Picture 1 (cartoon, rainbow, N blue to C red):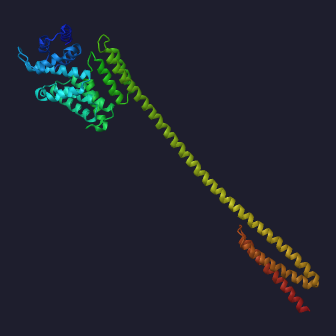
Picture 2 (picture 1 turned 135 degrees about the vertical axis):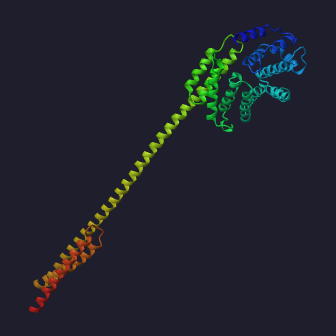
Length: 387
């Protein structure tokens, strides 16, 4: 296969830049079968090497070619080569129009769906990516398994669609598509490996989140690229663009991971703060309740002291008054009755105070008052009986 490729490379380099189509026709007639990978590579090389002879390619597939046993094959090869020329120059609109025009002429050719897929990928819309995948699957059915050009086109259709954010617009979920892309790349990663295949596999790894592996594969592809080719600078620039995208996605994923970790820490801190705040509120409520109880108790004690001193003052004043107006025995009887009455009143007052054991103390005082009053009345009765 390598000898065949070198032979065609030499013949392509020897093609003169004139307006005759005979030399190109002869070269196209000698190409390997269409389903052979070398057929596409040879046509791509012709498109790269003879940009000034594109009109002659068009003349071949639009006109009549004589002197050949298989004219249609040569015209189809010229058409494919011309479409490759348009695609590489970025004339996507002209390419689409040409494909539509010649669908009825070349639509049954095995590699025609592949050409359609290459065009659809360039449109970069959700629907065009899906059509590109569909076309490559159709091409896979028409060519032998493991055709590197078709297989690689299938993978790049998936990769571009996912890189451009159209995962939700595709008929199959991204995880399944990436698994298919990975298995497809495993089939075509033969020795020697095409540099761009390394880069494509790196892009697949990046979409799977394996950024370090992706960067390694892309750099391997860059190192494998032949710097003697005219397209070397363009290819390296394209590879570096993919490398930059992977770095960007890697940093974005790391930022998102750090952000998620930060949000988790913030949520944990907020939860702890809420717990501390709730605990503080409970402690404050308990303290407030205890303070209110203490204040109520102090108020009750204050009222008890006031009542006690008021009673004591009343007893003193009444005792002095009675002592000055009555003899000793009647005065003592009246003082005892007065003290009993004051105890009864103070006991009733104590019952209504908001303090601990107020009822017990009030009943005790009330009882003492009743007893004291009774003693006073008994003394008074006795005194009255003696007199």
